[in-house]
Length: 324
Ligand code: NDP
Image (cartoon, rainbow, N blue to C red; front, side, top):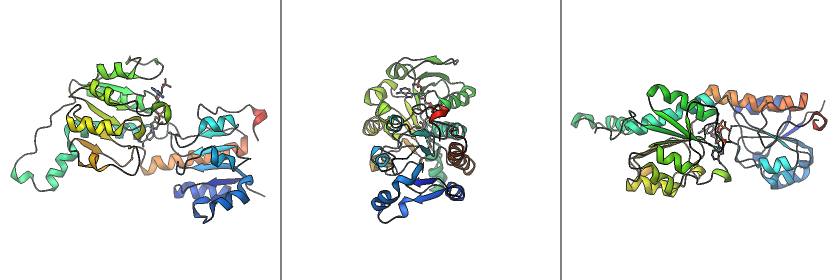
């Protein structure tokens, strides 16, 4: 029996690679010395892509795969997959929502606590043996009395809001559309930044949100301002953020994501008031396994039943007549 041919442009977790290898004929493109030749000779046999985001799945790659039907992405953010172009070509795109929500929200709260109380700096102080010479400096801020603005109150944003409530902070939010939630809605990001001193970003990345958090938004947060980003580095104008942290326009930042990962600019590394994590929002063994399983389950469901489990909004489930 012939198996569907699945293209993997880049490496994925061992679990995904093993599970795909057991069910599909997998082309591990990154291992091919002449990828162009592989795409030329085998491109027409490919009906699915499994991807962890790098390299991107764009129109140029889709051009090489005339029979592509589904792109199964690892991660809830799919800014590395051109879903609009996929929709235009009738290709379904899936992501891995929900299974990572709690882990990412935990990391957002962790970053907020670390940034507001300078916990990583305090830990470094102890490890460097400085405590014996005197106590660590008092943190210039506290969580008490803070107003928390969530930019992107979706699955992860709501999980962050729920976690923030017991800390006694007041939550407001900005999305393009208001939701039925017990938090005050701000129709613009500028309005939200005017009303809060703590901004947590949980929107998607991509062109629509690129650099929406800019120098003006940072200025509106004010000198007590703290920015936490667990979304995508592209949502913040990183140069403006570095300026704002340097000049005291805002107090501090907690970042899990950066503009040009894994490259973090030296200016950011040198700032004492930035807490920096290497994109670990969903990076627990259990969650990464659940994400990987959903990548595989989407492909299996597509090939066995003609429906994907978690299609992205740009490429909704096709009518049964269009399914394989
Ligand atoms: P959702 O789609 O559930 O939520 C996204 C929210 O952002 C929605 O409420 C949406 O509301 C809002 N939004 C989208 N576009 C805009 C815009 N242009 N302006 C204002 N608001 C906007 O996604 P999740 O909560 O599941 O995930 C959010 C993001 O978190 C992912 O896309 C990914 O980039 C990031 N992420 C990061 C991880 C990490 O490791 N750090 C791990 C997982 C996810 P509306 O449509 O009304 O505007």
